[in-house]
Length: 143
Ligand code: SF4
Ligand code: SF4
Image: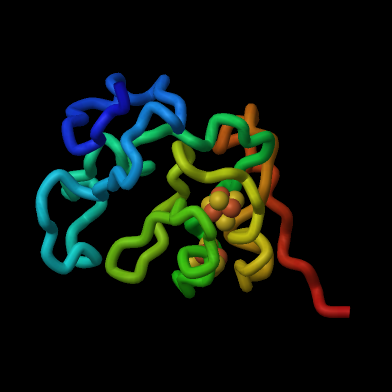
């Protein structure tokens, strides 16, 4: 029997469902209750519904990851604006870091970072972030 997503209480109930096992017209709700002015609510305090993609680990096939260097960042927010996966964390207009559970490793945040050297760089997925920070390039001189 097709499943009505309104009844879903945990992700375990639906994680193995095929597309044709969900009732036609089913809606995926973002939150379990109405949230006023959601942009003002910190991410960790939002009542995400189990069907919200926020609750799924979807970055596990990444082969390279962006590593963030706080010492160089000017908090311009370009990475936050351009990330196609909402995987950059920012609070009060300060860049905080990358949400690796969702980041796909596309590298767009690195491309748009304007500092010299960049404050975000791609490194192999398996590399420790501290090791990556120790390998950070120096400032490129103008030619
Ligand atoms: S690599 Fe891509 S998905 Fe990951 S934080 Fe940067 S822009 Fe977002
Ligand atoms: S784009 Fe670079 S400088 Fe701007 S907030 Fe992101 S990491 Fe910092």
